[in-house]
Image 1 (cartoon, rainbow, N blue to C red):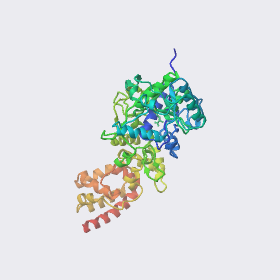
Image 2 (cartoon, rainbow, N blue to C red):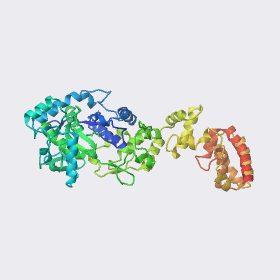
Image 3 (cartoon, rainbow, N blue to C red):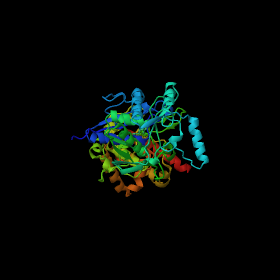
Image 4 (tube, rainbow, N blue to C red):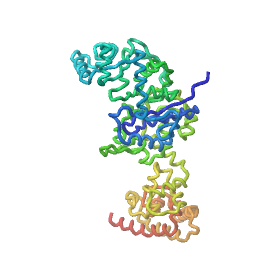
Length: 509
Ligand code: GLU
């Protein structure tokens, strides 16, 4: 028998922006599909109209596009199993709910919200706080199992509101094998009669999810651990319909950096890192920051995310998306929660910045700085700065001296490294620079070393003053490279001006 074609889906609900945990779910689905020559489907699960958030669907599509996680089928893309937005599939669900009723797996329930509230209150009084509509309590409720058939029919005929509930069997072990967690066994006595179809004419998540996974020929359901408690109901629904269930893989939770609890949307900005792929502004105008706007490269973000709950079993940490596809298996996804590590996330970004060709960085740099600069000039700036930067925006911040002469001089260096003799040493060094031709970093370096020998000084006594004059800073990349890049004229101008300014500072202090 040939293996079923691999078809997986990412099925977010547009109830808000996509948390990075959601992006990881999408990523693992994508990687699994690509690894197995399968299909990655995007399905929008919007049956809960009360939780619908405007703009969320667009956010999800945009965020996935930024990450490079491209669905093969989905809204706006098409495919043979559409539509891919559940509200657009609305008309197909009632027949499935009716089918379950006919088969004795579901029933109509007419209880009003007050009825349910009363039951809860009564149960609370009897010290049973977690009242559930289940295989025991259903016998004292208003449903098609307790009411006479003609009353049920006339209620429906008179358009009385009803829901359709799943008839959870009594005392039965539901078992299924989860690819990540192994065998899962749950007794149905712990499960309630979930609503499958609501009085507003919409299916609930459970019904729509199962019907869609089946009709979209989904082979593997890869989703967050928070859905594990729903899985036994889903397994029973497949059984009820007489359909083969897909294979399940429930992914570990993303935890806070200290391992204390689930990483929530509020944690990010509170602990100083984004929790969302891209910026999200709520209807009330509250901004949640995103990786994109913080300056992360999508490849770095994806690489970091891949490692939150998976590892390749080797020491390799840097993986392009294609490499992740080649290395990914669900068997290497861990059961235990994955702690988010903000420092490691920055580390990934640094690695990707360093690995980006200077010309490409120069192009990005040109878009964020004021003024027009030669692309080659910017490429050299990037080459000098990228080892010490995390984001492209760090380059013009830390290396502002590539674009403007210094206006301030690092106080500590002025204080510690600028001695009485330094003014003269720098004046003479400036004269030497004037004579250099061509003005290359190698020639500047050789000349500097000769000069040090002549005046019998160590590099540590003289170089900081040179750096101060040209950049205003205490640290940075090679001074010979900096000087050569800004050029002879500019170097000399900065030295002459700087010597005067620092001499003044010295008198004041
Ligand atoms: N709509 C569910 C969610 O928002 C999907 C759960 C599943 O993948 O079955 O996460």
